[in-house]
Image 1 (tube, rainbow, N blue to C red):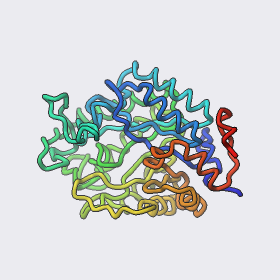
Image 2 (tube, helix red, strand yellow):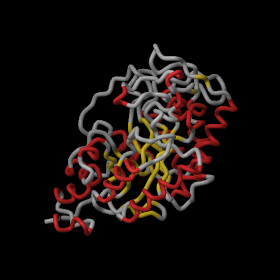
Image 3 (cartoon, rainbow, N blue to C red):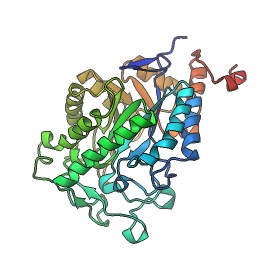
Length: 355
């Protein structure tokens, strides 16, 4: 049978062999931002497991931009080498290595989930966090420092420098993280951005940092390689960022040369109300794709081969990104091909298990 999920996707000079992508997922396993053998095995097994695109977890552009002290980073040249090794392995499996560059803003300096996930005090190894406005994510937390113009310019410069390192590391897809309540999303949302300067207030002002970062990344990222932006399509909270603004931003990003919008949702405020269920975020990806013509990626409680096949076959999105399901099943590319009776190449070391 001819499977749309296992059809190739050409974006600029890169061909992704199928429409299965591994979402960036924090592993909370780095020391001083450095990748190690955990990341090699985690990302490498999903490449040998048949996914077409492997996006490395939210990789911070600065030490203060990390979600946790154990996050990956690309703020110094020494961090490049291990990522080069990982990417070489991913490419050897006929998969495409991608990276998500990020800055956590006010959600930085948090403990890893298995250590409670709460804000780490400075006396225990945490650090001062920054945001568009001096408003904490949780009411009982220490407030972040509102970025001044110099601080904003540093963030933009950090994305530029990290992009230069990402090119040296051999990444072939770049994703800018503007979702899930991290720094760029904090600027986008009226629920976290109370500024009165050119970075706050109107829609045009709230999207300014995202556009500035896109331009900075593009100044270092090769024009022939794909550029994605991940957004939260809605805050799931009254008065917050919404799907109409997401469509409007996606139109502008397309005009600016962004190739794909990775469409997630939520994360801006702790009082969000998310109606969880299979495919709950897919309509956002479908709306953005239909209203703007840009490529989209769909995420969120997509767990079965037939479900993913339907999303691609019906034109709701161009890629399906898997997070938790790929943690449960690193080889979901191989198992989904079996479920859909799609003929794909297996790693030769595993071929004897194919039938």
